[in-house]
Length: 119
Ligand code: FES
Image 1 (cartoon, rainbow, N blue to C red):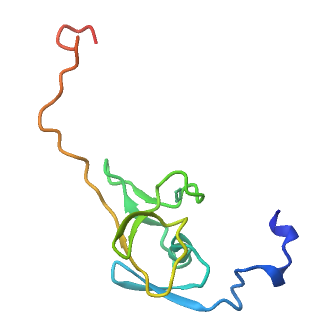
Image 2: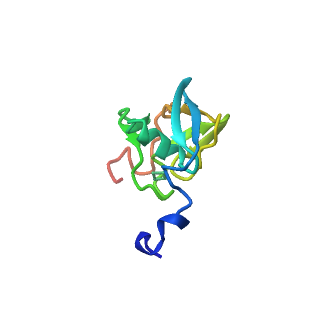
């Protein structure tokens, strides 16, 4: 089914009639509409990135929007690693942005053949 086949009266998300919700993102109130994903609420508020990569701290938000890339991870109501594009926002949700540093490597691992240049 395409969006062209769905009559507006049957659309479950009708912004003109949808009730408003409010979530807290890192303690900041953000308003959205019932039925929106957390990513949708964030994008609607003008937030394009809410996570940084472990390496080089590059900004990330929605990339695929279909739950495949995991670029949109947030913590929701204490649950880590929630895909913001897949989680429907509920009024009162508490969302925290995530940053996870790369694990420290205690000692470099020498691979077989590395010392004599065969690797
Ligand atoms: S944007 Fe790709 S998993 Fe959410």
